Every structure is written in structure tokens, then in C-alpha cells.
Image 1 (cartoon, rainbow, N blue to C red):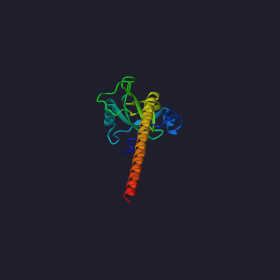
Image 2: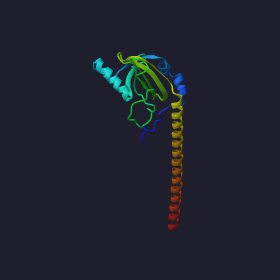
Image 3: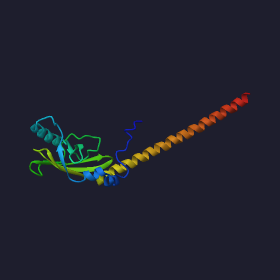
Length: 186
């Protein structure tokens, strides 16, 4: 079995980790952000590529205060395996709320905790502000998945142990029958 595929996506107590981890305490304060894509290109090309990426539902930027780099998907179910081939809804990418800015929102899992990032970026300067918050709804969904996965693994382990036990019984019975047959032959 592939151990990476079996690795849980979230920690058992997401809320506690969010509230007690220093990184989360820093990231939940509104912080300056900067678009980090295509740094080797001209500012004009970077502006076009940034807007294009947002319209497609993704972007990458750095949170200046912590040096944290994020590549976010701006779609309602970004944690799902299925990729949607349509533009993100206005709730997640809003070019119309404020002139010259795009307001963004993304759900994701950071260090085993379900979070929601919200912020905005100036489309000319390619910088802005944003922060994360604990995502209660996604945490509950991911927690259910985690508990179901643990239960499934425990059930498989019990089944395996039962097969091993039965196999051991059969092996002992076979040995006893063989020993009895050898005694009779002598």
C-alpha cells in the first residue's frame, strides 16, 4: 500500500491546532500580499497574466510578513478531486466590488487544518491584503472523512487479524493431523 495515499488530509483536532499554532496566529491577521507569478516578465505582462489566472480560478502570491507562498484555487470545492472547467463564481473572484482591485476567496487545507483565505489584490501594483480564518464547515466535512477513514482502516485491521488468527488455527490443526498421522505410521 502507498503510505502517502493513506495519509490523512487533516489533523484530528483542527480547531485546537488553528488556535494554538504560531503560524496560524500570524496568518489570521490581515497581512500584505504580493503576486509572485512570472517575476521574470514585464509588469504589464504580469498584470495580464495575473488577471487571466484569476479569471481561470487560480493565482500564486506570497504573504510578506511570514514569507508564506500560496498557490490558490478560487473555486467553491477546491479541495475536491474533480476539476471544474468553468470560471469561478463572483463570490470567489470579484473584479466588480472595487475599481482596480480583485477580491478573492479560497478554501484549502494548510498544515492539516481547513482554512478560508480572503483578500484583495490591486491589479496595477499586484499587491494587496489578505488573511485566513478557520473554516468551520470544511473542517466538519474533513473531520467526517477522517473519522470514516479511521473506521474503515480499523475494520480492515480487524478483518486481517481475524484471517491471521484463523490461518494460525488451520496451521496448528494441520500440524496436529500430520503428527497424528506420523504416529500412526510408526
